[in-house]
Length: 76
Image (cartoon, rainbow, N blue to C red):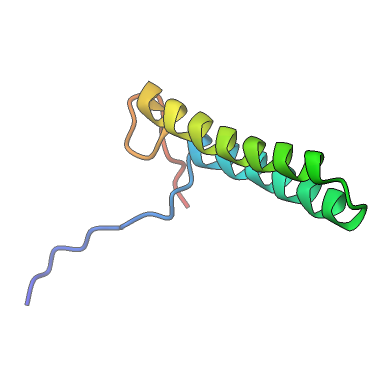
């Protein structure tokens, strides 16, 4: 049995938070647009969700993801 314990983390990083916030806004807009039968806005919100994924990926590559050079996790 190993005594080594590695904290896997929970993905708390500026890149993750930014991506999630953009996607939450996109899904909220899409749900409201779906309720009001506005298919163009529903599709635009789907595109915004994809943009959220891309922004998160770019921020991770720029060093703002977990383990990135520009991200320092805060202790508990």
